[in-house]
Length: 190
Ligand code: ADP
Image (cartoon, rainbow, N blue to C red; front, side, top):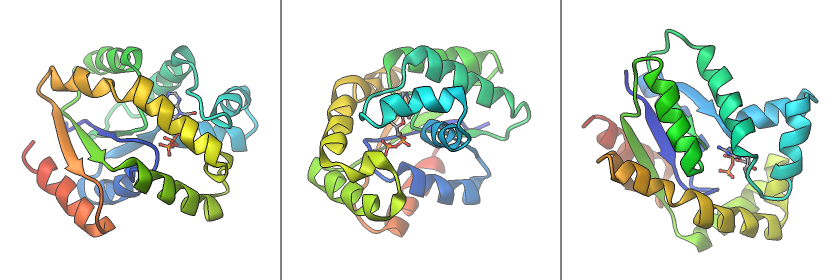
């Protein structure tokens, strides 16, 4: 069972690349952002709560996010492997993921981290905002806030996996196909 954390700042291409990797490897794709957006669309209490943070470019609190992820994981008792997209985003989330997976006799195999310079991220997110309908992509201030939160709270999660020898950096600039290829090369070494 291959369990991969696809890591990187907002706009790095995690969602785009996940789709190709699901096709090639049969992963179950768990995107916390997608689950929150589905809850917003469905007007659930979780959606209302998540929206109040997401629209400001802030992280949804750990306790809420971890409970949600645990519930998602429980839906797939016979999964061939997971690709985690947008989770973990904090140290406590990384520890919770280890605990949840170990309860399934599994573990994180590797973190694949898409490395993209900040100027490129901002340009991509503003471009995506023209068509995504995502309020958090439409406002340059919210984009900057998400990048700041990433640098302060999420980037350090890299060290958690480095310490376990599980961190693999992948250059995230180039064509979508080139980047998929780099990810596949890395995955095939696992
Ligand atoms: P992006 O990576 O482009 O910011 P996501 O869909 O991954 O897009 O996340 C959108 C928003 O959803 C985040 O800015 C945050 O508010 C919330 N979110 C997603 N995943 C998490 C998480 N693991 N912990 C806390 N908040 C999260």
